Amino acid sequence: MSDIILQANGLVKTYTQRSGKFGFGTTLVKALDNVSITLHAGTTLAVVGESGSGKSTLARCLLQLQPLDSGEVIFAGQDLSKLHASALRDVRKNLQMVFQDPFASLNPRMRVGEIVGEGLLIHGLGSAGEQQKKVIAMLKRVGLTEADMQKYPHEFSGGQRQRIGIARALVLEPKVVVCDEPVSALDVSIQAQILLLLKELQQEMALSYIFISHDLRVVRHIADDIVVMYQGKVVEQGKVADIYEQPQHEYTQNLLAAIPGKKVGAGKKSGECLI
Amino acid sequence: MPADLQIDKLNEATPLLQLSHVSISSKKTPTRLLVNDVSFSIDAGKTTCVVGESGSGKSLTALSIMGLLSKQLQLNTGKVLFNDTNDGVQDLTLLNETSLQKIRGAKIAMIFQEPMTSLNPVLTVGYQIGESLTTHLGLKGERLKTKITSLLEMVGIPPSRANSYPDELSGGQRQRVMIAMSIACEPRLLIADEPTTALDVTVQAQILKLLDDLKTRMNMGMLFITHDFGVVADIADHVVVMFRGEIVESGTKEQVLGNPQHPYTKALLACVPDAEGKNALKPIDYAWLKQEEVA
Image (cartoon, rainbow over all chains, first blue to last red; front, side, top):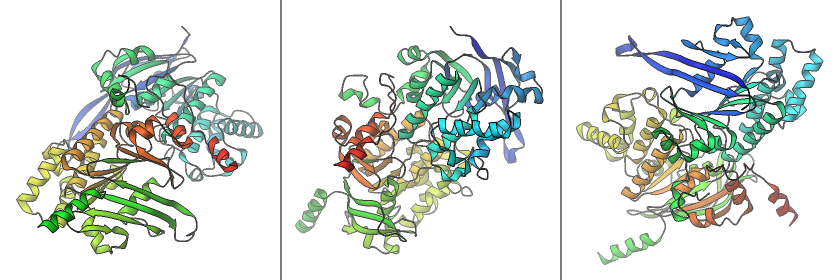
């Protein structure tokens, strides 16, 4: 077993929600209820669950984009939840995120070159010339061209925008990348391209992924380990093959049964998909 | 009486909706066709799936059926023959706006992709479901309320939610409200434009089952637009594959999924990740296009 690169222990996050007449009352929603995960270096850990299960909250809390109520996130021997803003900024070079909606997560008034290079600028990595070289190399690596640097996000298709989002995250050469549903907004035909790109980059740059998704077809192809979340709790975790072949928890079984195209198997060999 | 019977039989034989040679272009550049010579038909009680990537013209085709194309676009050629049991076969492209209004929502209804943007945020969902009932069937007062209640029950939402606003409902519930709205007047044809794309897999499975049940119970024809072959395998009777505005392949589900003929259909099928993880991921490939150009 490879080394542990990121570990989260007993994460708790509670949101207050307005309720009652005119929202005068409040109810507490437990988005994360004692969640612990372990990410091994160079592997992919998938977090699956339906909307509202807390998987996106987990992503944000791991990167300290939202404060935790309690629990610790250990990366490189430090507890991130106790770090101050400036120390956290240094650590964030190594922890990057690819967001779900490529239409909403890129600033429409910045050129692609600025978007991708912003991280380098903030962390003061290299001279301006070196930064530009890095940005160009990264854009080329994700399948875009040097000329694309001068363009704005609206000039690109959904798949290309997600490539920009990936370039933006990876230009800092992070160790851990949290991908929050990176392909759920894309056509099925584009999904495979982006997934393959993520896989290749993982090999080249020795990345570890936390991959958040509700699509178990996608997870099967990219993940090594799986955590299944339901209503803020981890209900099941283990190796990909084990969970797909012998799901223990009822909720995991339901998720697997809901994969489209599965039921048609009756016509062919039982259990086999038509596609 | 015998004459009437004959007409009924005649109507039974013709499909519920028939698109023949439909072409759509922008008004500025009429020679550049966005949808080129598309023909297919939908039978009552059956589901026809239109599959294609974004930009393949599948949504435009659906919008053209009810005359909902935006003003910048025009229908160049083609007929949309709708077989209405009362009025016989009509070409919807020849109807004026007033006659179309009578058909929209009453005989042909549509479910849109994003329930978030298609529902009015300042009206209760009960009101929005009732709107078409009042317009087309003239229901009012107590009778309207009972009908709304039964519709909400049919799609699996507690009737007390009729007084909720769209933002108080989850994504799946909103899509159920959209479905309740569309089936309110018991249409003959339901057009569903990627109704589950924005939803989770578990909710998607529920919505697909609901649509399939309603289709059978009300003997509706359904035009289902999607880019996901997994969904097609679950719901379709007939499949139409579109690429760059043209139909590249069509047939029964078993034909198209089991024995695809066109290289594009094969490529599109290959890029759906399989749940068993046996086959390697394959990005969509357009190599066949070059070969075709050479030939």
